[in-house]
Image 1 (cartoon, helix red, strand yellow):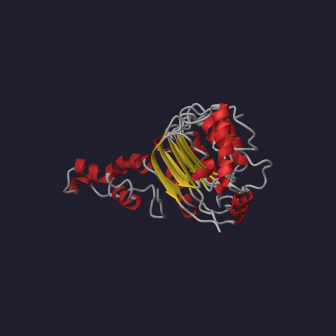
Image 2 (cartoon, one colour):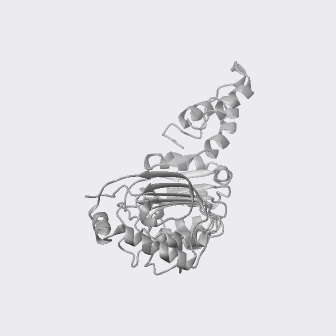
Image 3 (cartoon, helix red, strand yellow):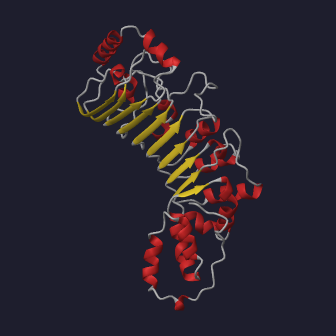
Amino acid sequence: MMMGAELKDMPGSADIGVMSLNVDVLFEIMRSCTQDKSTLSRLMRTCHLLYTKGVPLLLGSQITIRSRQLFSFCQFMKVDINHRSQLIRSINFTFCQLEHTIDATPEELATILLMLENATNLKRLRLDNATLKSDDRLPMTIAALKTIEELELDTFGPQAESMLITLKSPIRAMTVSFVDAEGKPLETYQPTPSFIEAFKTFRETLEEITVSSAHWTSPWSGPTVDVSFTKVTSLKLLDWNDVEGEPLMVAFPNLRKLHARREDIFSVDTHDFFRGAGDVGSLRQLKIEAQNRNSVSWPFLDELSGEYLYCFAILCPVRELSVSMKEIT
């Protein structure tokens, strides 16, 4: 939701009677402008009727809040914050200020907190590091919501961890980058958290998972995963840090789509890993024997894609396979 300085809570005084188009036609035009917030807000300022009809459209589609829009957004919400908060379905906080908190006044923070408290129809939420660290009350307020189905976190730290533990919403799709505020792999956690462990609160509701720079062994010593995500059918591993497939097979027994991509495959750490593995074929054979011994495997996968999938020792039938070949010298 791009709300610039021009978005005010002062609709124009034009008389609807002078409009040449039928009102129902104007409503349809407004509905087609939900992805163009500037055009929608201009239409809303033409008269009180279109303004009233436009508020649900403006708040019912994707809302994106950046630093430069925070003041105007808060002013807009404060007019009728209880009702308007209930109209919000999807909100994206994008401040991109690394480890710093958002540049907001106490009044603006209070408005954001009150808005979230009353966002009883919120379905999708994206949070950046600056937002999570802006106020200790914010993670607690989000954790109390019960309607969020899609959650995205662009960093993982103490605030995110505590929020996930207490979050009451039935999360269906989770996207988390296990990096710090500067985008670097986590180093403050010992041991580095397993995303399987971090997400276990949602084992009964999760269906889709996307993780970046994640671990799922800590360390792995056999199929000892004590949590099962039976509804998860899609798993995306970006810049993965483990090559053990067995824990994934135990944690996600009904998986149908697996994508594993490493963009930094030429990094020094990756070179050392593959060279240290020696005979990759022998390593794969050991994993196959372990899977057979422990009777762990997926029955089949609909889709399998990514790089160095050979290391995962996936034995099940695959209906659609896409492999990117990269050479390490």
